[in-house]
Amino acid sequence: MTTIASRGFHLYDDQSDGRSFVEWFGLLALCNLVLLAIRFAALNWNATDLFFDEAQYWAWSEEPAFGYYSKPPLIAWLIGLATSVCGQSTACIRSPSPVVYALASFGVFVAAYQLYGARTAFLSALVFLTLPGVTLSSGIISTDVPLLAAWAFALAAFIALVKGAGWWAAIALGVAIGVGLNGKYAMAYFVLCAVIYGIANPGGRWILVSPRFWLAIAIAAAMIVPNILWNLDNGFATFSHTADNANWQGDLGNPEKALEFFGAQFGVFGPILFAGLLIICWRAWKAGLSEPDALLLAFAIPVILIVTTQAFISRAHANWAAVSYVAATVLVTATMVRDLSWRWLSASLALHAAVLAGLVGAVAVAGQFALPGGADPFKRTLGWSELSTELDAKLETLAPGGQPVRAILTDRRAMSAELLYYLRDSGIDILAWRGPRPPKDHFALTRPFASAKNRPDPIVLVSQSPTPPETITAYFRTVTPIDTIAVAAGLTGTRRAYLYRLEGFKGF
Image 1 (cartoon, helix red, strand yellow):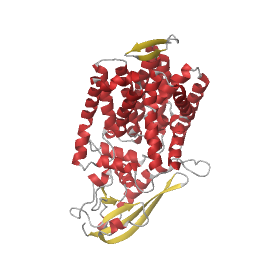
Image 2 (image 1 turned 45 degrees about the vertical axis):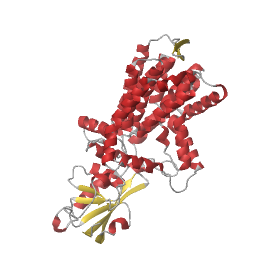
Image 3 (image 1 turned 180 degrees about the horizontal axis):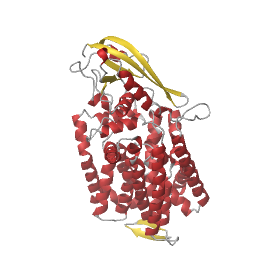
Image 4 (image 1 turned 60 degrees about the vertical axis):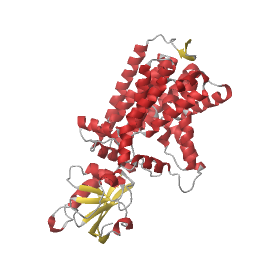
């Protein structure tokens, strides 16, 4: 190991392997090509329907904007770009995920290379690509995908800035943070982690008063301005949804939720890697860390602690701390290389490769098997296509005079999103119930059933509830049950839709 000192920040460059940067970078590119081939094949074999979040993001992509009810716009732009190239299939809609993760791995490589050398950089990128959370996320389309990629490149740029790089690093950092904010507001954690690093590490405090760092913040802020203006025009819908998602109401203080979230991190990051991260934290508590390790820890642990606290207060999904595992991947991998813990690293990679292979096989036969005890892991993503097909056929026979129904009303976001996608070529106008209250989802915001003017009478309500909700029926003179559609959702589940004829809209 040779020590490189820059602005008092000590970095370590491992050249003991004998290979050059270009060779390791090329090997990573080759691994990415192999993984991309596997993941694209898995997308084409995937037997699941779009999950309703995925269908919602697709619907957003059909209406380009600088913001949407629950998220910033980047996910919709990515889907729009993909569908303009390869069409409207589920595989195409999900295709940005493996591509963006491949790009993210190069950000991980550059970040790790600056701290530990090319061999550790390659291993870190490979570990990142095979994380269980990344493997799962590569088969769907979600806002975590561009978020993690932006975080990886922001981390690489921040490390370059700490090493004393020029203004280009500040610009790259600002752009990466700005892109991440347009993907998911959780990118703001990056700035918090940078501040924590600067405060906690004497060798990095200068960064907080550096004009280059503040230029990066200014660039990021400028890039999120269009989304803020969109929110200003739409009652700050995204900010309100984000606050609602925290759910700081009702019973506060749930230790079992905190334990559940913390335990789930062994699955997201991998059991060996997460255990390794905990060991590193214990070492840091006892004896401190080198400055490169301390930097990475500052970008890993704070978000895990924040989200665990959120889980204790109310709730948290397992992926809410996903950004932590960009830096954590590099830190744990570098520690294993330094400690010559090759068996643990190899075991982790082998375990994650098995997860990848198992998931590729599982999605190909989704709906054809159940876990012990009868649980179907894909139940929530099955049955939507068949349900929509049967509904389309049913609507042809419902209206008086033999005229097909051309407008339906939905009462839940999931139904709105799925029908918008699977009935996209039917010509049916899909409206969302909003009522007299502020909207609770994007469809209630953008396609509400607002009045009887220019609306057919009767209208058909398509609901997942066997009893029509009074929040809707109170505004109509007559409500008549029409039919029930039931289709299989895997071996053990059933997807149902209840149809009601609504007549005589009273107004709000």
